[in-house]
Length: 314
Length: 255
Image (tube, rainbow over all chains, first blue to last red; front, side):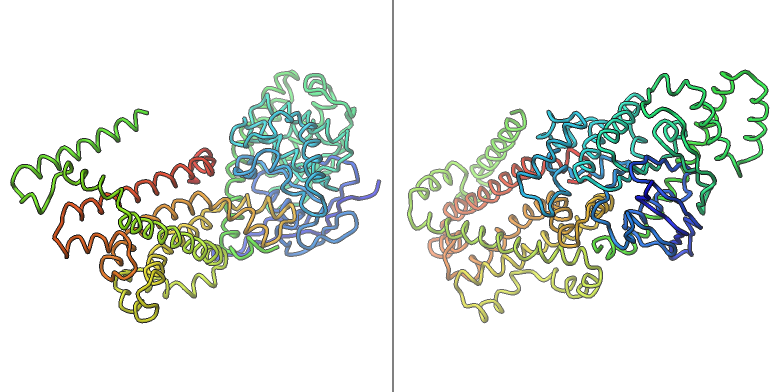
């Protein structure tokens, strides 16, 4: 399989007034064309930084990123990003249609833009909402708009930053299946950053497990599940349960001792009890990560505000 | 409709108090004529061509002044708001110029521009530029970095980010600035007309009604018209704001 994205020896250190912060130490991985790879890691481990370096929004301190063979310097023109916070990444003054057309300026006529946007909205089932404004839609629908906008751009690589973390569980399942569907139909290469272990296994062809900050790759797991997945049966399957347990265990490295002791005790119990316990541990971890993630985002935001000049320039 | 009813009640109450006060004998009738007298004069004036010409002169000058202010302040605000170096370099000058009352510049303006409408329009622009400028700069400070990142990730360059993201996102603030600017501009225009005269307008009408015949009823009629112009302008802009940039308040914290 040819590599669509290749990250080699990537490292990034933020320089701030109160000292330097290394978000990524040394990261290397590849994503093949047409693959869907999930990156999962403890929050604050530099996932957002990774995403911003790949999308060319920030220049990494060291290492190299290539997208279908071309080194990434500045924002590549065939890459699309879906951010977690749809309410802040959609343009409130534009209609849904306008939002989807926004990235399509270069080399396309008005009619072509319109057709492409209509097409992408159909893929995500939002044709009826084309003339509404984002704030008139539910959260799940807004995130669909963001996905349609990214798809309409026909990116070589679709980057997603915790894309379903801000919607309720039911909507998350819907959006996950939507992503799998459009990705299968259009053969898009996708890199999803998430802190949800279940989600990473459910969505991915591969799961990249990162270590805590500064980030490095702990494991690169192949997900041996059938291409067609189902929210109920897939999640019940032995492969799925085994994989999510493995990812959870890998992520546990370097966690406080009581977590590990917990797990050892759990191992002696029945499987379903194990699952319940694990879920609880996951939730506990998720909460802690969310906290760390906020800290990291804040740090990145501070830097951005600091170099306000940079905000506008490429 | 309830808001309208309440507004009307307030206005009627104000007129009643004015009427009673005017008739009470506390102030001589010719100093503060009651609204009933002023209304009669006003209705006569509305059919009076020279007066209408004065009103048109003021309104026209105001529209020109506000238009020019927008044309100057918005681009300037975009530059100051997005290039910190320019903003820092100009801060001292801006803070020095801003507090100077336009009226204090009348002598200078007459020297440079003469006594025609250019002079009063320039002074009105001087006063009206600030609220628009400051609102634009402030709006860029409040610009959500994620919106900018989104646009940049889709390959938008600096100019496109500024025009297609920063500007529309600043629009609710800018319109608020324009509303303030229109009111300020009207005050300055009427003041300059009143103090410097020369180019007609409501201010000059008021001045002449006072100094010639001491007709306070005419003075007040002119004042009421000035008030009505200000009110209508503010109301119209508020409506435009609700209609065009309704998302500003609908999304919360952006208005």
